Length: 250
Image (cartoon, rainbow, N blue to C red; front, side, top):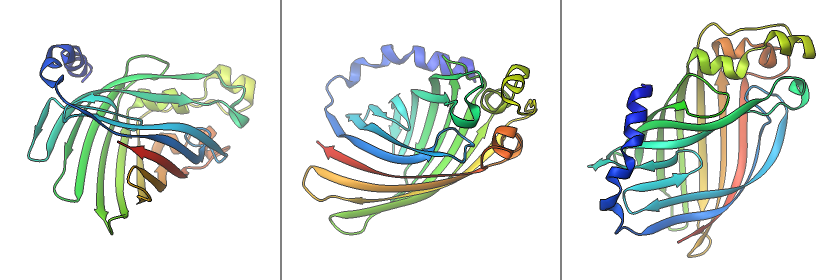
C-alpha cells in the first residue's frame, strides 16, 4: 500500500499540465464546532476554524475532510484520486496533560468515489508521511444528499473506518513513561479497531453567494481503542460532534 500511494503521489506533477486551463470554484468560510478534545475523550471543546472547499475544474480539489487531491480518472460518476491529507494526532489536555505529545502530520492516500444520482460512496486509504502517527487507515463512507427547495438541502450517511494496529497504538497506547507520570495503567493495543459513524447536515442558501450549514455526527469506538484506559477510565467510546458553517460561494 505504501509503495502504491508513494508512486501515485510522485506522478502528480507529470499529470498536471492538461488541467491548467480549468477554473476555480467552491466556497470559503468559517466553522464553529463542539467536539471532544481528543479521540476518545468525554470532555468537549469549541473550535473556530476556517472552512475551505475548492475545486479547480474537474481535476483538483481541496477541503478539510479529503485534503488536496487530483482526479486522475473521472468517468460516469466514478472518480479516482491520489491525495495529501492531514491527521491531527492527539491533543494532550485535561486527563492526558502528562502524556507525551502525539504530533499530527501529513498523510498520503488514494480515494475512490462513485456518485449514482443523489447518493455517493467513497472508499479511501491513507498512511502517514510526517508526524508521530504510524500504520494506515481505511474509510468507507456512504451518503445521500438532496435539494429540498431552491434554498434548502440536506444530507445524511454512515461511515466505517478501520485503523491498523500501528495507527491504534499511536493514539491509544499508554506507554511505561505515560503510566509513570499520569497514574494510568500501562496499555499496548494488540490489534487495529473499527469506528462506526453516522453524520448529517442541513444547508440553507440565504443569499446568492452565502449559505449556512448545520451539521452533527456521532461515532462509536470499538476493540482495542475502546479498551484503552484513556477511553475506558477517563473518556467515552461514543463520540459526538455538532457545529455550524458560514460559507461564501463563488
